[in-house]
Length: 282
Length: 310
Image 1 (tube, helix red, strand yellow):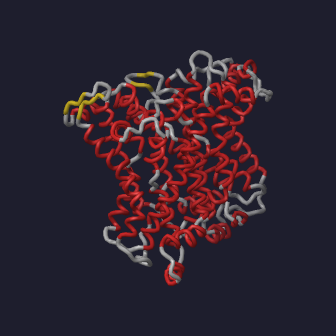
Image 2 (cartoon, chains in turn yellow, green):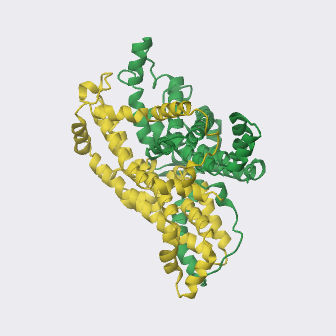
Image 3 (spheres, chains in turn red, brown):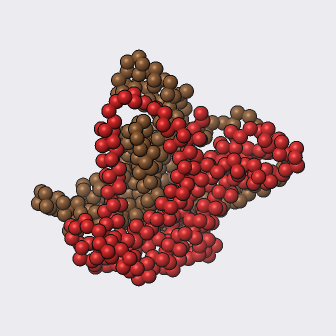
């Protein structure tokens, strides 16, 4: 994944490689099988979907149309996009600011503040939903608002730690020079640190977008109003329709739901891989 | 998501910028959100756990540790806890074994290695809910392709989602499948950071590829394996919710509970379907203790047993 990828890490180069190719092709096929199957079925009309046929048909856009407007998938997708983008941008900004404070300042109770961020890793939202529901719906009266599925997720311990780790690998002399030139910490962050952190930002953006897009249990309980619901819960409703499930339409829905995170992943794939390789202390 | 390397304490205290209020200003948004949406709900969870409460009726009655006693004595909860344990062990062990093998294969110096790697890690972008939806159709007893093939070849049509053992196996397999890409990303990054000279030296000394893997590479990969064991335990405990909710709805019923009802699913059921708020809060408190225990183990065992290499 890195530029060093071509260097033989193991196994002498003169060995036969076709067994490796065969094994990898098989693995890739098995891993992709559910998705390939879904892709094919999404294109078939209602009679072919129920048959064993694996020949692609021409009904993809009709199936898509049926879930997009008929089952409100378009509405759900828009909601999920708003949520995932807000969570991604918000988490990145907040984590950058927090890491700036942890790396470039010395202040009293720094250890306590760091401990509080660290401790939050031990408190998964899934476990807190009972009390969170009470707080968000009764005290804040945020039920059925975007705020309910965005704001609670804006702080990122993972992001703070990854940026902190990354900043600590950047020579202090840069910060000293910036300060002597009269830069404040925020200018230093935007002009120097951010341009040096695109790999980490990209890697985190993938993780955070996927996390925001994949939200399921919390929107399921807090969003009673259908027009604010996210697409993951929307998928559940597609299957639930009762009686006859229109599987061609459901598969088209599943495929479309997978597209935005796949696009983000594809666009930032280099950064995603490199961001992780670089955080290894080597 | 926290990597072992990221835990290293800062070797030097930096104080490039001055100002007592400024760092707190930068930390304020993060700390405020953690306080309101993590710490406050955590405290409320502990308080709620001491009441027999029903959000629909708006009733609250103090029962002290009664909810906990009730849970621990409940055969249904015991069964759910045991099922969660088996599911977690199978998912973590199976998932890590598969992903290490695949990452090892894909990091061989072969033509197209980069493409293989990409094709192995893209499913990271698929959500558990999508995974559940795809598997639900694949294993549909009448029209799923798996049973259509089985019927044609062996004249059998297993009821995947209604037969307890099959449903449990299916959820476990789907969960392993869903987790593969994430694990492969980390294994690939670590394998590429292995010290090439050590591996070459071993080869020159006449070590077989198998020996190079087990005696040299595997011990060097133990920190990342260790890290993945814990992240995988956490995701088996929590991310399985969407998968089981869509694929099996926690069923089929066996003994005292649904066989694919795991701890989080039970918590959701009691909290938001049966409206036993106090009992659900007590379950949440028990799960918080579980996560705390796992995290402490991660730090304690991590310091001692793991070979941190190079």
